[in-house]
Length: 236
Image (cartoon, rainbow, N blue to C red):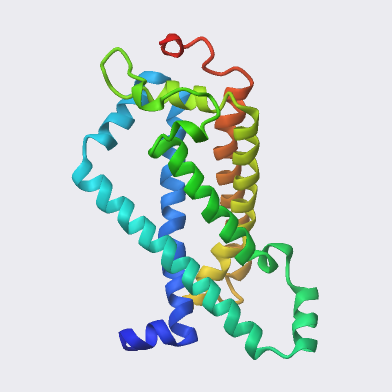
């Protein structure tokens, strides 16, 4: 298959969506493991943050690649959705809709909302725009005793806002729905799913999606309930 056919054929777009989905799925898992270091205390989390910020030559190319992957994933999803609607007779569509799961029917919608949330998340904790954190504090000025960016104080301060926590929980639930169907669909699009191990893949998709959902929401909820409140860096 030529490069042109990859971007013009339905099969090519399915490969693009599956491969970009796989890469983004791996990022979601790794990002969660990094964020969960908040429960190891400020020193560990701030050291992790300093490591990432200290490797700018790797960090920015990684961010650019991730943005390209997100763009290609959304583009292929929109194009395939439009092609499917155009090619599908209405009675067949209604029958399929009744048989499809809620997660599968809302893949495009959940994906677009998650994309909007990613923009907010980047403005909140990466670009650190004061106007969106609802605290009035400039997160860029938070420094720990080692003059490293105080990521721990930033997260605790940011997640003390119930509205922010609510937005994160809703976004992570949509991510759960998206992954619970998307992981299995990814294997199917790549030709790695067959009747023999299909149920195992579906079970894996469900379990890993729950792990990701519970892992991500555990951070803002724990902070909202008081975790980290005694941290001395919050008084700076």
